[in-house]
Image (cartoon, rainbow, N blue to C red):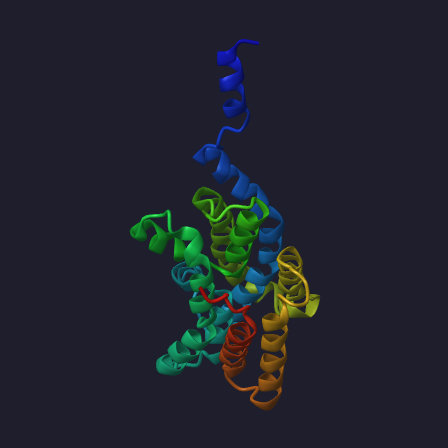
Length: 249
């Protein structure tokens, strides 16, 4: 082998994947998660039409909002006429965790122009956020692969919007879909994602504190979504108090 071949071959062996390859990798990675989306989306669509929303209004809501927790909250609070301020306030409260999630993701998106990053964050949900961070950490990279993230997000987004619409169309036919246990699929998805992000008990203390505080708040204040904000604030406070101190210069 010549000197030129020896110099070129290592670079070719470690060539960076193309954007299309990363997009396809993201779509493939999203398949197990989006299968868990389907039953939950059917539940939401069926519940929405039972509250009076139209078949076209349901996918419009899920497509413009794309945040399952706040959408379930909005549907459960929906009345005729709807209390729009209450629904908006509760949706904001439920989605407040996205502030912490986007702050955690921001250092991994510094290489992305601001406009593209803000557009990409519209598609951020718990699953795409967790998968993008886990992928970067697994690769030992300080940057999220934006194409991989968008591939994951595209699969999840389209599945969510499509099957909430199908759930709305089939809702009057299948009745109460929760009696089939479909709502457990989302819980299973979250457990798998948490397992992939597990870094030991010490690193998981904020998670556990957030879980305990959220559960206690839910028991004491079952109405509304105050347990979401309480859990988020408690987890953030625990992370700040237990973070290792940097040595002084």
